[in-house]
Length: 68
Image 1 (spheres, rainbow, N blue to C red):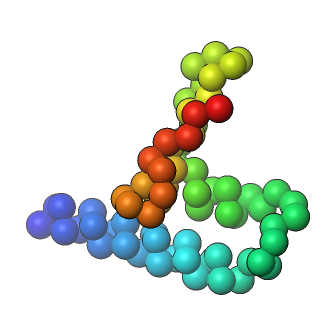
Image 2: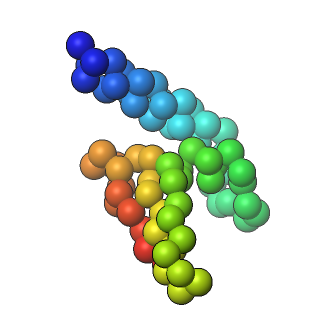
């Protein structure tokens, strides 16, 4: 049952994210804090030259991590 609950929570988060994306302009010209918060689950700073972002929508909807 816990796994189903986790899936439903994740689904609701994705649905809210998609709804928030519908309100955005086609071209984003400035930083949008709510968009950023909806995309990034966590960030790990390994050094000044290596930062890894874990994306919220990593279940087949996009890459799970982006390293910069």
